[in-house]
Image (tube, rainbow, N blue to C red; front, side):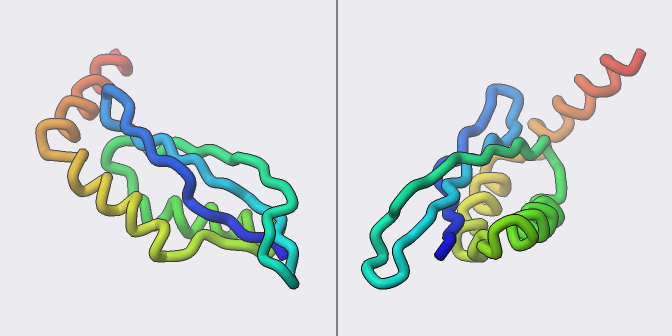
Amino acid sequence: MNRTVLDLVTVTPNGHLQVRLRREIVEDATGEVQGFAYQRTTIQVGADYNAVLATLNAALAKDSGSTIQDADWQRVRDIATATWTPAVVQAWAALQAAAMK
């Protein structure tokens, strides 16, 4: 059996969320983890984190059949809500605008 769990969420200095998933191979009979690999993704400030979840789950389901549970992803939502204040979103937008000049 394969299982994907949210392992770590890190907030970068500019407010992006770095998400680390732990993709596990689990023994069906015992539930013992036989092996694992990490997969990472970054969510930019102000991005639609629910759309990111849908994209990740579609890719994971196709690859291993194991998706991220909504309860795990709720941690990402909570961190984004707490981190992405209007000031952080405005600062990121200003930085992007300046980079485009």
